[in-house]
Structures are given as structure tokens and as C-alpha cells.
Image (cartoon, rainbow, N blue to C red; front, side):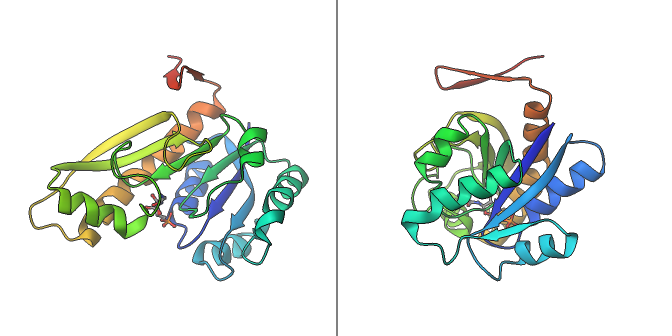
Amino acid sequence: MLNIAVFVSGRGSNLRAIHTAIEDGRLQASITLVVTSRDRAGAAEWAEAEGIPVLSVHHVQPSEVAKVLLEALGQHQANFIALAGFLKLIPSEVVAAFRNRILNVHPALLPAFGGTGMYGHHVHEAVIASGAKVSGATVHLVDEEYDRGPIVAQRCVPVQDDDTADDLAARVLEIEHSIFPEALELFAQNRIFVRDRRVFVIK
Ligand code: GAR
């Protein structure tokens, strides 16, 4: 059973997709905590209305964030972390404590279009400007570097000639909403192992 802490910074559509997958029985898990890097994020308001505990790290001193997070994760018995549009780097102490137990969803096909500054619309604008004909979503394990951890799942979408960043974002977001809960379910079923930075799914 996964007890997931979902980390958010904004709207929270991936948080809601994870919640829906749990309600529908597609994901054997529960969301025990929502961590937000912004006080008035839509996701945090939604979680509060659902009765899910919410921790904001917005006003926490950078040097204190790791300690505050580890305490809250312990208190809420979280054994897994899902980064659903969380725009801050996870402190290395938390990565170490949750090694291979943190997943991030990224709105492009990593290792392209990732790294510092590559989030939200910046990603889709860069994809369109590059002339790439496909984009997609990536779910990957989180290590100490932005967007570099081992890849668990990817799915493609076409980039159309007349796409705006908004058009492409909407097409990719739909994919995120399915591959993120699916990837989490592989961990819930204990079907993942990692070797030499590669992720293998046990059939
Ligand atoms: C999602 O598209 C997610 O992939 C992206 O932020 C959005 C959050 O949307 N994350 C990144 O760009 C991280 N590099 P949501 O709040 O509606 O889930």
C-alpha cells in the first residue's frame, strides 16, 4: 500500500487525477499529505476541502525545509512522494530518505526539454520553437538533479503545425493524468526495480 505525499505548487490537476484513480480503484494507495510551495495554490485549497492534511513550505527558511518535510512525512506515515507540478528542488536529505520512492511528472519527453527553468509553459514553448514533431509526458524517479532521474514511463503526443503552447500543454496534460497514476500503481504492486539508472517493470 502506498501512503503518498503529493507535492504541488499550483493548480493541482495531477493531484486530482491521482485522487480519482484511487477512488476508481485503479491505484491502490492513499494520499496522506499534500505539501505546497505556495500558500494559495488551487491544489492546496482543493486538498483542504477534501480533508487531506496540507503543509505549506512557502514561509519555511530554506535551511529548515528538509527537517520540516521529514517530520511531516513521518507524522503522516508517508512512504512515497509524488511531485505533481512541484517547482522547487527536493532537499537532498529527503531524496536520500526516500531513495527510489519519489516520482515526478514532467510535461515533455526527457532527457530533452528538462532541467532548470524548464517547467510549465516554458517547456511547451521550447518544444514548439525546436520544431519537434512529437512531445509527451515523462514520469521519472527523482534524484539530486532536476529532471535527470531514471525514467519509469513515457507517452507521446503529436505536435501540430498550428499548436500554441496552450494547445500542446492541454494535449500533454491529458497524458500526464493517465501515466502518473499508472506509474504509481506499478510501485504499489511492487513491480519496479532499478539497476544502473534503468527502471525495469516486472511483468
Ligand atoms: C504539469 O504539467 C506538470 O507536468 C508540470 O507542471 C504542471 C502542473 O499542473 N511540471 C513541471 O513542469 C515540472 N518540471 P497541475 O498543477 O495541474 O498538476
